[in-house]
Image 1: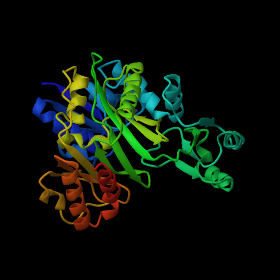
Image 2: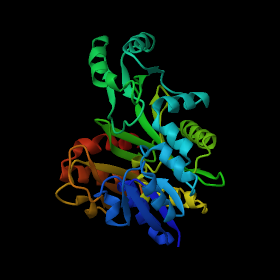
Image 3: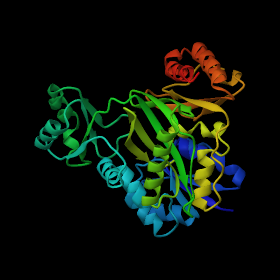
Image 4: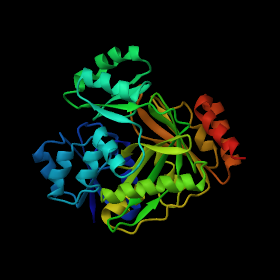
Length: 382
């Protein structure tokens, strides 16, 4: 029986393990936290990702290694890759961990990006703002996620506050300044590439964020065929350039009919959770198929789907389960402000049916503000 090792034991590792059970797979998770939620279902080693003795113990017990978040040290992935197959490869992980390397690669591949500049000092920040203009966003090059590690500079007077907030990290994790994009829509391509180079995508997804955290994802996104084809082409170009194996997300801004790449997530992705119930093969199953060298599954969609994130705490009642196409995912986490604790997916055969279901769920749960932009987009399709 094949054992898959996963670096990181959060909800993504948990859902990977659940999707791998029908394939007859075993799993071993490694995480720094003893209460990581994947450990509720699969064996787990607890230790530092840089501890070579722990990594050796991990490597001896698995046949292939993957990861569930991009802040696993790339050096650890490289060390493991010299002893056991690791997918995606350490290079892809390293690129995704550094916003400057990531944006530079996008530009080299002719994938449009917002203007950006590396920042190592206050003088460089001042000079970059003169060139890029305001508004703009100062970000750490590493370790930022869900809106963390960034400061939006709305006007020149905000420069001092931005440097006070992040300047100390210029010499440690590094900084990057990016032009602010007044986008009309946020989109993502969820794609998978196999060991043999086979490439597939799920339908383009539209996303909404609140305070930097994903709030809702709708698939398929309402776009013209040319825009979707451009998005898929960018994803294919990126995957081939990195010799990528597994599932990834390419996050995109749509501005004035043009797509601008925001970032690469080298793993299964929050905006692809709808694929569990809304596609022939989920992102989790296809990720496992890819890293194991198995044939990829069909990514066609089953109707229309919307994923709603539950952040901070779960609702008092599981009203989603009252819906014919309602599905619930509790991550087994204790409530905490800003923490993703679960998600729900609503699937329907038509956009009209999905609107009705979303409106009912929003009313019962008090989440009308969360579902409103989604239902507005769906109404616009009619």
